[in-house]
Length: 503
Image 1 (cartoon, rainbow, N blue to C red):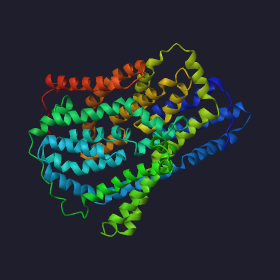
Image 2 (tube, helix red, strand yellow):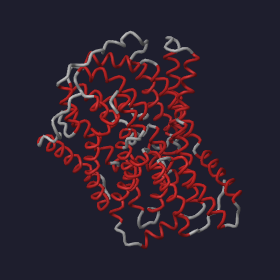
Image 3 (cartoon, rainbow, N blue to C red):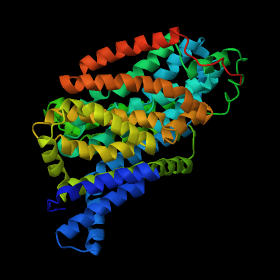
Image 4 (cartoon, rainbow, N blue to C red):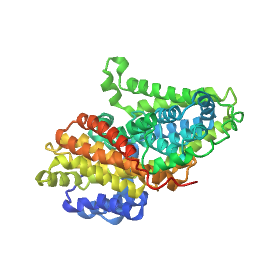
């Protein structure tokens, strides 16, 4: 569908500012995005001599256009969530828990196994939270790891892992937002600049290995150390027909076939280089992988009567229904970005303003990290945050003088979105993490806040360095070393507040 752009000057800023302001005020993303989208159409129609009725019609024309442009992504996410639903209902998680319980004998091994499982289940954050919590909670209880620490490990290996995993719902969502500037290749380029995700994973591994806790988390661990070990690990042993393979095989097939699918769609088997092939139409290849995972689950579950055919189909429908809310955020953010870029000239106006301003571009990644973190914390959604900010960032960095800052700025956007979401008490990932660990929600928020904020402070230093050097590697190396030193220092000074509270 063809759209004709009209230069609207300062008015072109109203749609994104309105959407962000309403989201922060109301804590509700859907109506805020729609209000921004519709206001953009009104500005476009008034500038071109149209009517309100035309604005309404064009609003849905834009949504139709964006859904059509991203049809493969919608299909992939639907199939992915169908596989997630089937795997979670198969009993494979419980089987893995029984197997792992016989192997893990120490707190360190249990914490590391929990972290590793969280990293391996990178397909989707919600599936990650509930699966890791269900599987590992009986084991961590028996070995006296606090529910608060379990919830933190779950939360810290959910969104931070998904946002840098190329085969995940998050990767496809981000790639779709930057489809006009490079898509999947742009997403891959942001991974080294996603300092919050990288540092959070490093912190989880370091704390799991060393056991060096601090702050409220240390109080929680001291409290549990004085309690009797929780019983009940064997309670669910005979209630499920699932086996470990029911958890591992469908996901493994999905990942392998997704990579092969991207190569196939891009012509790798016809002589095209691998890097070019996977970037040609990655969502089409990912869709093939998700379908392969679905077929694998069917062949694995139905003959063994893990579930009936009716239950199998019902679980598929349940899984697809779960993707509707985040998918609506994507459609609205795509449409808002389309209005700003294609109709009212927001990009041209912002680009011109930035090119004539005296703002040091080296500060851009740090400022964007702070803004996206505040937005995500306030709204409780990282998808809604980067859905609003990515179109603006691509416009800011569109002039040739600022193009070198696009990747660092996008990496900072994703990092800030995940940090705010990680800390926010109203985030669905935070809620699911406390649910999966069976931990009081407010205790999870309180105990992980100091951990997440320490990482965020070091990220701020990293983005200041990256903004002026335009390379992530100095920030990554220095940040990890600084993070390890900070953890050891805080643990050594005994920062744990007052005497550990009794349960």
